[in-house]
Length: 301
Image 1: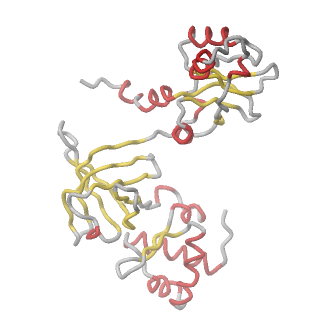
Image 2: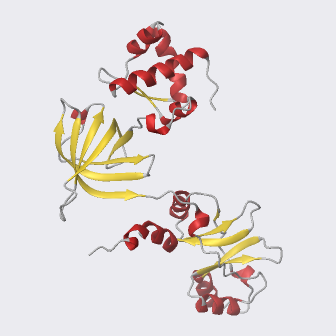
Image 3: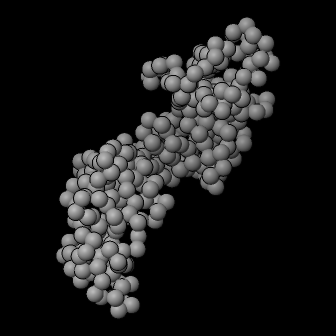
């Protein structure tokens, strides 16, 4: 919980109330009139609130302030009363400063294309027809939309998007999709024996675990191939391993698992419990299977 002063609380509550009424950027003058304080006082406090992650601010005549989801959480405002705004990025990752307050999908029946009507907060004029943008992520479903702008209504603040791609990562804990059958090697096991296990189990790597159930390394098929090419056949697993295993807690979200795999350029993570002990493994295949699970639940022809 963020500790706020009384003036800070008054400003945030006024910002939320005004924004919920107009669904547009809120000016400092509007907040000042609402709480009967000087506009200069409001502007002086706003940088602190932005640093705390409670507001978003856009400079310029058409700019203003928006409350963030964190601001709503500070005052325990129920989720169904919150208007969460979704950021818009250019294809190069640059933030546009515009936000989406509502999305309506159109032409979903068409086998060839799908369109989305976006309600924009901010200057729609800075987004050009033909430009490709990325919308998201939406905080509720971690959904990201990639598309091309094919229409723009500046008067009503709307964009028509030809959808290129929609990605949604389900909210799921690692423990729910990990493999609990952990094939592992012991430190003093010979490289030959380890190679036989990896081949027999149709896996590309295996963790090295000692007698106290401590994770001490990871042996990959690349490690084995390297040792064989160098004539190092009669060495132990511990001597052959070159990669430090990357781990993830069983209660972490699968989105965190994806990020760790991407950053480390690997396809597997060793799952550990609260005591740091290895209890399973999660792979890219596990993640992909979870994402396509809804398609398997229905018959699509």
